[in-house]
Each structure stands twice: as structure tokens, then as C-alpha cells.
Length: 258
Image 1 (cartoon, rainbow, N blue to C red):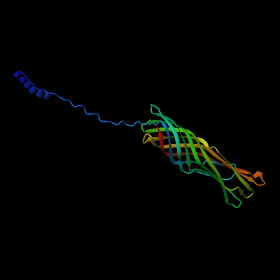
Image 2 (cartoon, rainbow, N blue to C red):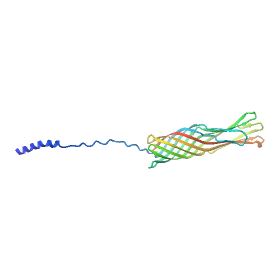
Image 3 (tube, one colour):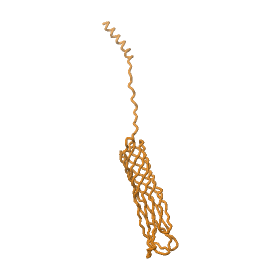
Image 4 (tube, rainbow, N blue to C red):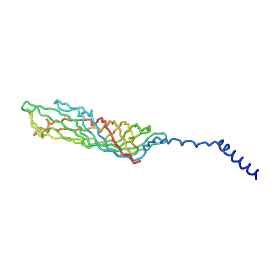
């Protein structure tokens, strides 16, 4: 019994010493959570609106087969704005191909006129005012994406609704004859548009951008005929030609369904 008691006492004495030598390693602290940077992608359909200015739309050279003087006036800078719809596809190498169609109201006009001397020694003015009521484009796009930014070039078909109005009355009298005045107008209405732009994604679904386009809609040609009453030998005509081209710079906003 004495030996058993001594053994128990020895165990009780040694156990705390052994326990004091035990080393516990605390587990490492969890790594801080790092939020991954967003990866923007331009693929998908989008719709939006645009607004800006159209400028440098010049009247074309005035010509006439009569001896009367002619002239032309430069077109005016005006507002342009409307809506667009498109689709882009971004490749693994960050190149982007797409297509876009837009339709815009435009406030711009070109004017050509000429003056003829009447029988009272004054002048009567005749000519044409050409107004574009609306214009649209259907274009291809090729660009390069840099995360949320994209630069691109674009080009394609342009079309418009052009309203030509002749200036001057339906009759004219000079020192020798009286004339019935009539006119006919022909407009191309279809041309092309080329340009470039830059877009930036504010979020994955909303982008803003700036786009420049040069649009050439061909020419509009108006011929004013002066038919001498009872003296066809004195008939004459005058022709006005206007170049229907302009530059535009527009700000854009789009919503992307991707």
C-alpha cells in the first residue's frame, strides 16, 4: 500500500510538469477576402439614344443656262438627335465586331438662289430650299475593348427624307416677255456614313459614348423653267445643285442586355 501511495504521489507531482511542456499552435488567421475586379464584356444587344450637332452642310455650286446671276448660301449648323439599336460581339482577343442602326431628326438646310431683273427694273428671286426632315444609318462596327472602354470605327448605308421647296412665284415678267414659272426637283436621298467613336461602360449594362460621323446623301437638283408666253424661242431655265453632306458629333447613352 505504501508503494502504491508513493506511486500515486509521483504521478501527481510529474503530471503538471509534463502539461506545462505541451505547446499548442494557434490556427493561422483566415486570409482577407479580396473582391475580384469586375470583368466587363461588350457582347450583346443594346438600345439607346443620341443627341448632338450637325454642321458644315454646304450648298453645292449654282449653275444656269441663262445670262442671269446666281448664288448659293451655306447650310446651317443644327440639332440632330434620335435613337439607336445594335449588337456587339467581343472576341477573346478583345476585338469587337457589331452592327448598329439609328434614326435621327435633323434641323439643317441648304439654299440656292438667283435673281432676275423684272420689267420694273427691280429683281425677283428664285431658287430652292432643301430641308432634311430625318436621316438614318445602318452601319457595321469594328472596335477594340480595354475592359470598360471601347474605341471603334464604323461605316455603312445612310438614307434621308428630303423636302425641297422652290422659292419665287409662278410667273415672271421682264422687259420683253411674260413667263410661266415651274420647277422639278430630284434628290438622291441615299448615300453613306463613316466615322468613329468611343464608349465606356459605367456599369455592365449602361454605357455612355461620343460618336463622330460624316454623312453624304448625294445631291439634290432643282431646275426652274421659264416658259415665255407666246414666244417659245425665249424660254430659258436655271438649275440649282446642292450637296447633301454634313458632319455630326453626338453624345450617346445605351442600355446593354448582356
